[in-house]
Image 1 (tube, rainbow, N blue to C red):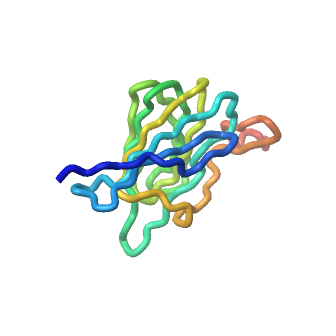
Image 2 (image 1 turned 120 degrees about the vertical axis):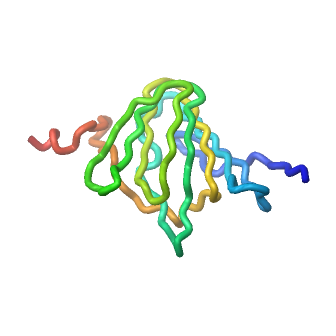
Length: 147
């Protein structure tokens, strides 16, 4: 069976726009394809959350950097330590269910492409600050800022 998808905009604010395709009747586990286009001049991180695991159901996300450079932050399995990796064009990652994650654009016009087994629902987001904003500055290490 041939299945068609319509691209629609989910979010549009001063940081980025998100558009996605969602399959109503998926023929395999992939349910969502997401495009995150970072807006020019954006100095704010996106994400800064994790997704709730509800009745054993949680989203797995695979993210690919189509263009640009970003800093990707996530919490390790213990939930205590924040990990960080710079991603460049062509890099990808898998975000396991329930893992906190955030991205900060390091280059103008960075674009992420995301694949998930569940469509995005903002009601399932649990905020988690992985980058800290102070005025117009982003602190890379919150603890060091208080020393």
